[in-house]
Amino acid sequence: MGIIAWILIGLFAGIIAKVLMPGKDPGGIIVTILIGIVGGLLGGWLGKVIFGIDSIDGFFEISTWIAAIVGSMILLALYRVIAGNRRHA
Image (cartoon, rainbow, N blue to C red):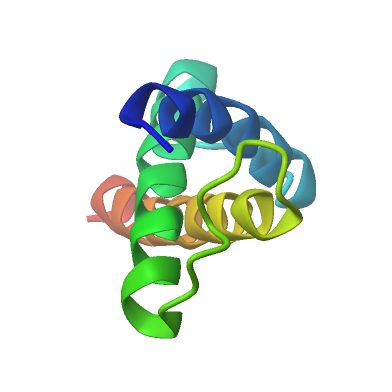
């Protein structure tokens, strides 16, 4: 699956991650979408590297979407921790 497909999946994964992790994000919706795109790429990469799963290559595969959503949630949580610490400092 190409990089463009992962970007599209990441866009939707960012929105889903935001729904699953409600709350006020320091950067707003644009930053959340960008985190989703990067998280989708991260999730896809981690799925291939850590688990060695070749099934993470289809746009309509459930494993692809789960990897992208989990990657987005990880980055969103890290962003909230890092950006939250900057605001209180």
